[in-house]
Image (cartoon, rainbow, N blue to C red):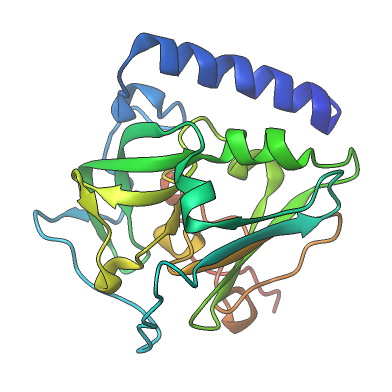
Length: 221
């Protein structure tokens, strides 16, 4: 098995090729299925709003993104510092566990790769924990977080992400069900041990792969 650092190098090379190509082809990037729409999903032209019922108002002057855990260089970004980082644009599909999907979502923000390169996760990191201003948490395997289209987005379709959809900044991990993409993101922790988040402790899957309908945790008996 490759070490996390070798995995990071390999994934970064793939991400760099994608950036150099100057475009994102979400359908071509899906290697786990010959179909663009995952099984059990239906296509929508709208963008339904699902959240915990809490939509925090976060003044940009007060917004912070804390990145820490098992990293060499923990960092807390202000809004100005975060938006001064290299910007990444990606077009990807969005799959909600409630069975709807939206194609060709255009996101802009900071690639997860950029953040990882700044804080430098330690070799023992296996998981990432995201925390939000509304109290929400969710987890992801480090390999999923380091996918070539994962980002912390601040814009959707060329406009700032509105509060209804998790603005001012939210996580996007297109190849997982959308609950893994924390809205109102406040903190990112790199960890060795898995720590299930809000929906995971309530029976949702840890791995959340739409192409295998990996919606819920497997319970024996």
